[in-house]
Structures are given as structure tokens and as C-alpha cells.
Length: 441
Image (tube, rainbow, N blue to C red; front, side, top):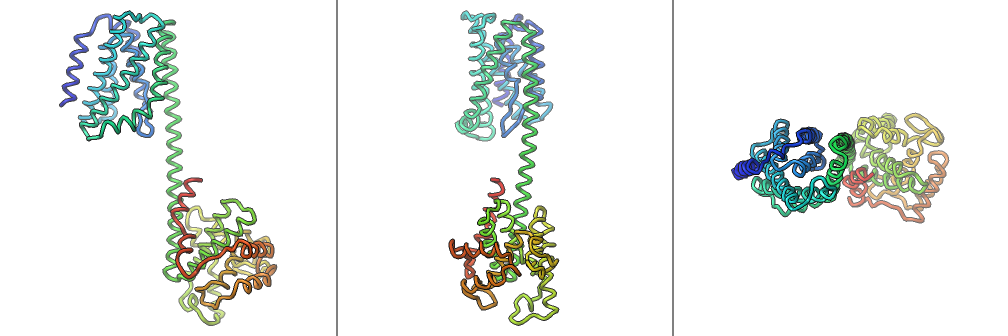
């Protein structure tokens, strides 16, 4: 109800102070009305702010026409807004009252400046326009903030701090633009002024198109981030599910991921390749879901039939991982992690450099951890014995150069994995950090 009273009061004062000369030249009134409506139709909405050239047109009407024409242009613009957006009645009334009051106050201020000797036909009058713009933008904000305070209880101080203060630099720039428009109008007349206004509207249109394009790109990036989060979540779910069935295998996978990343880093692989081999390490044994318990928890020599099942797990794991969007390269690494340099591996019998480089890293990490893991079903061996075995099979089962790189890491940097607690397992899985890393990249 307060808004309605203020609106009626503003209209009454505008009518009472209106002069016939305020509405001339009619051509300027028409141009400013068209500019206000066009600019409002092209309003740029970005990050909670509305950017429009309509305010500029209204301020120019205050200073070169009068309070009543400025109020009329402002209310026509708000009526256009209401028809287009259909806001709730209380917000519509607040907007109408606001857009009746500040043009009235600004118009009366400009008229007072003229009465005090500021001549609208002089270039110095531009500074009056500049001042009127700043006063009315603050008044506009104060009235809007008051409306939100009454409707929603939003503290006005917070609105000043979070909305107006960040906008002040752009509003000062807009005030300077209004000053320039007024000087051009005084010096060159309506024709040159119209050209500048067209340029302003065109600039606003292009800016709006650019920001829409940028927001679409940001939305696409957000969707990509959501997809990455989903992928990481699926990855974590797969590993955690494996952990529920066989904690030893899950911890082994985390150890392999750590060792493989260390090898990749040591030979100068990119961050992307390091992440790729780490992910493959976490998932390299996911195909063991196909193993019956007699194989998964075997403490005896496997039969020929059981061994054939075992040999299917790289391809089975690759098939499962390959179903997750974006993990195709990981699936290929998993498929080849049991290939051998001498060609006697499985499932494809690849040899030498036919085997993907990252798969060869997984093979080394896998072999070492199986021998040394403290929660293995096998009796673990010492690091020295494991290193001796790595060197023995280098060049036949494993890549000899990468074996020496890995041994160097073991001896010099002390890279290792603690199997007997969940701490290292959780550190390698670390879902939140993986998502944050993707968002930052």
C-alpha cells in the first residue's frame, strides 16, 4: 500500500509541475522514448544484475525536457516490463513508484539548476546532467532497496554493500557517457545525438549477445564439470564396491595407482597422462568381479579352467570401464596391463612397444605390489627380493627401462603404500580432490 501512495503522490507532483514547454521538442521526446523501450527490451541480465540503457534515456529526458516527460517515459518503460515479465503485484507497484519518484526528483533538480543560471544550451550543462545521473542512480537504488526491505526484510545495508558498491565503477562510466551525450546534443543537435544513441543500442545488443554466448559457454562448462563429477563418482563407486567384496584387491589397486603415477611423473609424462595412469591403476582389477570366490580367495594352485577365467579379467574390466563416458583411454590401458614384452601375455599377445606405455607402467606396479603387499594372500617378500625379481623378468615380462626407473624411485624417494590401514587407500581415491582438480583445469 505504501508503494501505491508514493506512486499517486509522484504522479500528482509531476502533473502539478508540468509545463507545456517540457514536452518540446517532440522529436526528442519520441527519440528518448524509443531508446528507453528498445534498450529495456535488450536488457542484459548477468550474475543478478540488470544492465540497460533505458536509465540513460530517462536521465536525458529529466535534463532536456522536464520532470513530467521523464516520469512518463519511465512509467511507459515499466509498463512494457510488466507486460513482458508479469512480476508479482507488490514488485510491480514498487517498480512503478520508484520509476515515478526518481525521474521526478531528477527533473526538478535539473530545472532548479536552470533556474540558478545553468543554461541547457551550454557545454557546461553536461556537468549538471552528470550530477543528476549520480543523484538519481543512488535514489533509484535506495527506493528499490527499501521495496525489498518492506517485501522480504532484506537489510538495506547489505544491499548497499553487495549490489550498489560493486556497480559504482560502471555507473560512473555511464554518468560520463550521459555527459558526453548531452554535450553532443548541445553542440550538434538531434541528428548527431540520434547517431550516438543508435550506436549505444547497437553496443548494448552486441554486449548482450556476447554475454549470452559467454553464459552458454559457462553452462556448458558447468555441465562438463557435472559430467566429470559423475565420472569420478562412478569411478569411486566401482572401487569402493570392489573394496566391499575384496578389500585386499581394492587396496592393491590403490597401491598400483600410486606407483604407476610415480613412474609416469619420473619419466616426464604430462599431468593428464599421470591422471590417466592413476585412474587406470585404481580400476585395473575391476574385472575381477567375474571371479568366483574359489578364485578370488584362492590359496592353492589354479586349475586350467580357473586360469582361463583369470585371463578374461583385463578385457572384462575394460568393457565395464569403457561404458563410462570419458574413460575410453583408461579402458584401453586396463585391457593391456597383463600383456608381456615377449608377447606371451594376454588377452591379445602384444609385444614390446605394441603395448601402451601406460599399460607397461601398470604391469610393473602390479607385479611389485603383488610381491610386497602386507595384506596379500601370498607371503610377502622384502623390497630387495622384489627388486631382484623385477630385474629378473625385465625385458621378457616387463619393460626393462621402466623397471629401472621404478627401482630408482623405490631406492631414492622411498615411494611406498601402507596396506594395513585404509588411510593410503582413501588418499589415492580422494574423490573431492579429483573433482576440484578437474574444475581448476
